[in-house]
Image (tube, rainbow, N blue to C red; front, top):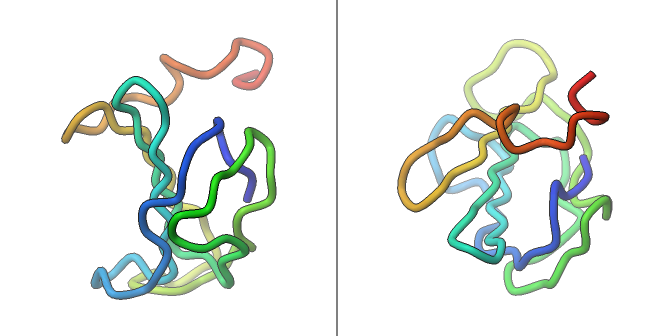
Length: 92
């Protein structure tokens, strides 16, 4: 997995039930991205990450039956549709 944008890792662990190995990255402007069900985490809480940096390896941890990525973009406390915020070339 690669970071969607520059930011700071605010959570890196597996304590949240069902999400397996989870990363939460805080970005400027009140944005947050979440990456769940990773096999391994390549960054730590407090680490500054750059857009495109490898942050995790895909996996099948938590409450899933196949390898996958659960990806969320959040503004404040609520999720938003990530397609509304991705560059046009990235969503094709």
